[in-house]
Length: 516
Image 1 (cartoon, one colour):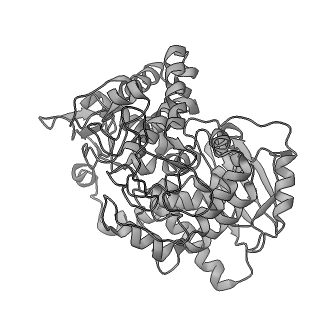
Image 2 (cartoon, helix red, strand yellow):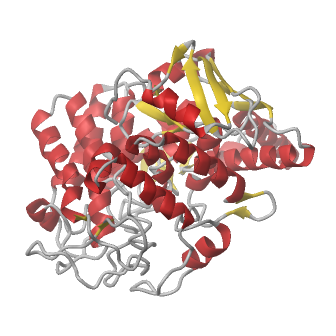
C-alpha cells in the first residue's frame, strides 16, 4: 500500500487522501437514497436517517481486503494461510465471521455493491486454494471459531446468483470447497471442516454423548448449510449430492420434541438434544443459556426454538399447525426476558437481551435474526410485520447504538435490509422475503444503471402491516420477490395499513404457496 501511495508523482499528501476517502464514502452510501422519512416528526426522522446510513456505513466496511497493488500495477496479497508467508496474485479478504455474516451482510452487498461482493467471493476462493479449506472466521487467518461452516451458505448462494462466478472453473472450485465441508470427516479437535460430522452423518444429529459441543445449535447450522449446498448441487446437476443433503437438512424433526416445555408457559415444543440411542435429554430447561451441556451457542433453547429457516411450513406442521406456531411466536415476543445460568454462565448477551430487547427475542445476538420472517410460513405474516417494525424502532438506538454484538456488519445489514422491507431467509434461495418497510420512499442504484424504487406512501408508525405489495404492477401475494427481478429495477410498491386482518387477507388470497 505504501509503495502504491509513495510511488505516485507527485506523492499523495494526507489532505488528498482524506478528500478522496470522503468522496469514495459518499459514493458508497449513495447506493441507497432515502427520499422521505415515514413520519412527520423532524427529530425522529433525523434519528432514523442517521441510524440507516450509520448502519449502511458499518455494513459496507466488511469484509476487508488484504490485497495490495504491486509496482507493476497488478493485485497481490500476503497470505495468512501460507506457513512461509508467501505472496500470491489476486484478491484476498479478511474479517468476516461467517456464523453471523451469512445471514444478511452478503445479501445486502450483492444487491447494492455488486463489485465489492464479487471481489469478496473471489477472495474467499483464493483463501480456499491457499489453505485447502474455506475459512470460517478469518481475522486475518483462520480462527476456528463458532459452530459449523456457515461460509458454505455464502459460497452456495454465490453459485446460485448466477451473475457472480462467470468462469466455469470458479464455479467448480466453489462447489468443491463447500462439498468438502459437507462430506469430509475430520479428526476430533481439528479446526478444519465440521466438528462432529461423522456422528451427524451416521445419526442425523450431533449427540449429547458425543465428542463435540453445540449439539443442537451445531446440528441446526449443519442442516441449513446442507440445504444451501443442496440447492447449489441441484443447479450444477449433482443430483446424488443434492438428494443426500436435502435428506440431511430435513432431519431437524429428529430434535423436535412437541411435548417439551422446559419450564415455559404456553405452547409446548422445543428443539432438544438427543443421545446416541435416540432418547431426548430429560433435564431440560428452556431458559438455561448454553443448555445443561453446551448444546446451544450463545443462547438458550428458547432462542433456537424456530431455527429451521429452510422449512418454516414443516416446522408449523410439527407444532400441530400454523395457528399453534403463530401462538408460539407471539409468546416468544411477550414472555419476560428472564434467563437461567446454564452451561454458559453469565455473559453480556443475557444482560443485553433483558436490557435492550423484548421478550425472549434476543435481537442483540444473531441466532434469532430470521425468526420474525418465519411467521409467514406459519400463516400469520402480520405478526412478523408488527414485530419487525417494533425491532427497527427499539433494538437500534440513535444514542445507544446497536442492541448487542454488531459482528462484522451483520446486525447493521439486518437493519438496512429490513428497513427496505427485504430479507433472504434461505441462502441460495431465488427469493428475498417481504417484511415491513420503514420509509415512504427509497431508491436503490443497482448494477447496469438500473434503479429500484421502494415506495410505501403514507407509511407511519401506526401502519406496520402490508395490505398489498406489487413489483412493477404485479402483486406479490406470496410476500417474497425474486432477486433477479429486483436487479432489473422498477418499482416495488407497498400499500401499508393499520389493519392486521387486511394483511392476512392479501396473503391468503395468493394463487399458490411456493417452497423457500
